[in-house]
Length: 338
Image (cartoon, rainbow, N blue to C red; front, side, top):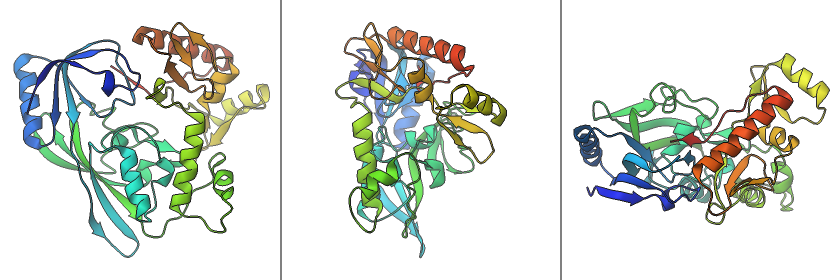
């Protein structure tokens, strides 16, 4: 394993910041991980596990060790008449796994097409889109416990998946390095088309019957029409979570703002569309310095070329204050600030 010093992270953060890590290594085995952990311990430095850097905001140079996941491979590990259990290395790009499943007619993750990041980051964030979360299909996670340096297997229940949350972001943050993820996918997919305009987009193909390929293609078209390509305009996707509010509070908001967009949850609470809240406050398309709110989707904060991390954070803070003042709703950052 090669430990590099003063490593540039411009290609490993989708905001495109010109920042460096004091140390960097790419790990592809348990032995590599143990070496990296030992190096950090011996030198008294912190570490941070990084995939593609698609959901992180570095506030500046990282004065520690960036451990970059490099576990590869996709394959079936078990099956039954209705399901296939697919295992993928944590370093694989998430959308490559989605394409792999769709090409084989397997259902469950087609709605999660084109989400940036790696397979290993998917359960950490409990990624979700168009009415589907990885929690719906996760079977288990293999990881290395960075404290004991032993391999462990965590069930979906062990991962404590919630809305854009998991044990890896809360109680056990920084404890595990995920090496692989196993998903439970269906041989007979039940398509989920009830979110937003997904059904209309699929129906516009003119086909009499739809499959997972049609759903994937539709999701990709929608995402490309609304979200900026990080390779062109630096961003980390949705910057804020959709806030959850109690029914009484939602009814009060609805009376004051009849056009408010919300989704009723099984608990009876309502999830508000953060993008609508931000847009209603007038932030869509606004530019402050080199940071801005994307003109097609107010939930996305972008780097217009030379933005500094503090400019992104200042804009985010102003948006939070504005939404709180207008609606009485507190926004929570979805992006991991490092």
